[in-house]
Figure 1 (tube, rainbow, N blue to C red):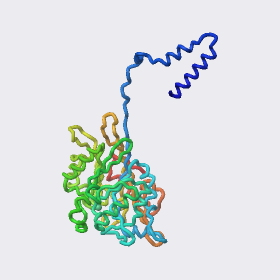
Figure 2 (cartoon, helix red, strand yellow):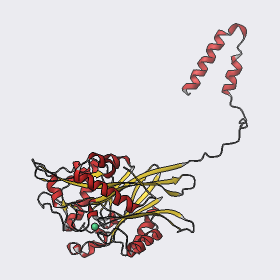
Figure 3 (tube, rainbow, N blue to C red):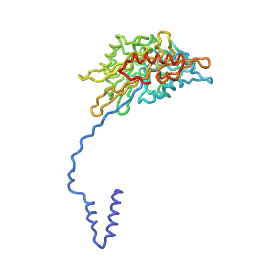
Figure 4 (cartoon, rainbow, N blue to C red):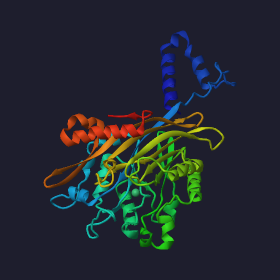
Amino acid sequence: MGRRYRQITAIMLAVCLSAATVGCQATGLLERFRLAPSKPAPPTQPPEPPKPKGKAHVSIAVVGDIIMHMPQIEAARLPGGGYDFKDVFREVKPIIEKADIAMCNFETTISTPQRGYTGYPCFKSPEAILEALKDTGFDVATTANNHPFDSGEFGVTNTCDKLDQYGFLHTGTARTPEERDKVLMVSKNGINLAIVAYTYGTNGMEGAIKQDRRPYMINLWLDMEVVKRDIARARKAGADVVIACVHWGPEYVRKPDEVQKKTAAQFLEAGADIIFGSHPHVLQPMERTTVSRTGKDQDAFVIYSLGNFISNQRNETTRYTDSGVILNLEVIKNLDSGEISVGHISYVPTWVDRYTSGGKFRYRILPVGRFIDQTTGYQKQRLQAVWKETTGLMGEKFEAIR
Ligand SMILES: [Zn+2]
């Protein structure tokens, strides 16, 4: 007997006892309660149609190259031993943290104190950089670029191990064939986003990797059949959206070349919806576009290069290597039709401030617009110039955030 039934019976009994002298009108009630009606009562209203489910949104923040030159490592070295890179990201942390998913192109390898740390041309960095990126709010690191073989097979496996240890989702390089074929799916707010990552090559460092391990240790986009197969696997695993991070393009050139344009079209055709480009070390434009894989136009988006997010590159090749963006992109899913669209797109221009303190260089990434009024002299001048350079390149179709 249920608790509620017991309570009702008790109430009925109390009513009967108190009404003993005038007959028990409640008895009928009690009987009716006990005997289920032989026929269910007809519904008073027709069943309601299913309510519209509305739309789900997910916000993505993505930045370009995380490059670790030796002066940056020296800047982060602590007097008592060890390294701390958190100050580098302090001013951009609130922007990165706000996004549902934050992504970066991790273009170095993680080394150990015994193996040592080096900058260009073979990047080997302290694991403290991962601690700082995690603290900043990054969730996903892609590793398909031209530097993961910089410290041989150890670099590939140790970097993946450490990315795991610090809680990153990552793709682009792998320790085993099984890991290479596993779909990186990020599910947020009811939207499944698959992330794939590929590079054009690895700077001639392939020789550091046993030949039979190269096909799974790095993802290359040179074979689009492999890309197609990967994207098909992601769709089968339930991806609503496929994001392709592509390492490509001529270095230090602020517009995409014909190969990038052709490759972007091939990626969209292969099933990618969104392309985040990296490698040129300078920004290249972005565009909303459409793709009609099923005979119907669908939203798509390409940014050809996100620029450098952090590096020691200044004026060696071109003045633009000190700048990047935090790109904010919203993905919307219509929960009734399943249709995906690219929502609001905005960007925060960023600049790497390299200054001297305690006899060595220090680095911090500044959101350009916010710091123009908080700086003087060279810093202010360069920030003003970077604002113009970056917003000029990105055009008026996209909102630049101060
Ligand atoms: Zn690169």
